Length: 362
Image (cartoon, one colour):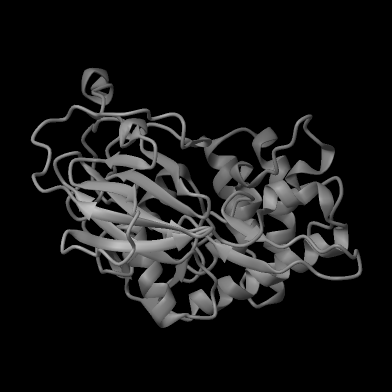
């Protein structure tokens, strides 16, 4: 690893994308300004988007002259969500019910807004946030999306208020949405736009990149991907054949962690919560079908984080996995157990086959 290259920062940093320059006015990257529109009848040509929130009209307008430097401006902290920022992402409130999301970008990346619009068109039964406007800021290497707040609370926030029966109902709803998504198929490991997936989906040795920079590789054919997996498994001594060989790849949202979807919280314990929106769409793509029900068993990232931590924090990954099996997704535990055993210690296998609170099989 080239550590010097890996540590090269993004300038300006993602958390400096949106700055409050004066009350009711924000600088957004090098291209846009958001401000309260005092005269809502005065819609000038430079205004690309406007919305009314709690009786106040806001507008997004292009800068008359794009910034030619990388110098951020304004107060970056006042409107920023403290739980949703880092090296490659940040979220700000522009108005009480409208967010600005910034994420790092490179040429060839399928943006989250592009994916959401595709989902809205092709699988309209799946609830998403509403995109008001989006753009790419190439000088600042980021993509920016303006979207409306989704009704409800994140599942992580709602978790302590829900009964076991209500939590299982949520799992069934998410599984049905994943089922609808999986009806879309492809012969390539790719995004909905036909580009390569962000991450390690490559069949070659990968060069080092700065830590903030998304890795976008060319899309990979199913045949080449399966041949690569076979070579990789052979090198580890894995004898079980990878599942779904020769079958179409299916579209999937691989990160249904408790902060990536929202639900209503019923006032009556006999009523069921409703999944009102699934978020974080930029990473979805076509992958082998077996992963949908099986990979949640490996997903420590699916843990419900509470303060203090609770014993049932890992239950969500089991609920989701079992619900996916009930709607028809295969559960390939033998394959995943052998894969984990060959790469790690026997201890690492326990958490995918043992659960304190829930049955491990449907």
